[in-house]
Amino acid sequence: MKLLRKRKDNQLPFATSEKGMRFHHIGIPTNEVKPNEKYIEKYKFYVSGFDTSEFGIEWMRFEEDSPVDEIIKKVPHIAFEVDNLDEAIKDRKLIGEIGSPSKGVRVAMIIENGAPVELIEFNNSK
Image (tube, rainbow, N blue to C red; front, side):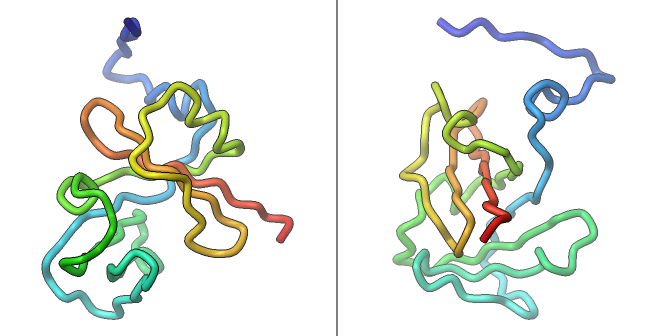
């Protein structure tokens, strides 16, 4: 059984303070059509807001037959950039498989405390 560590109100999450993860965005499911949506054909959903949001807010609108896991379609997720995706997902419960939504990007979704968390690795050499 994994022991849970507690942090104080003024402490940053361990993901950022100890593991070096960097906030990337928050993905919020919606049924509303949003301005300037971009369609992600592979996953059958639309995204918007990410490229213009000062705080990294991304809206996600899914087609009925989107292959994305139901929890991601219903529960907002937070995303962190990591240096080593394989290390970051070690001993974690994955939602689906590691994906590559675009060249030089690897993504994994995990469950943390009942909520989805996206971990993103960018290969900046490409």
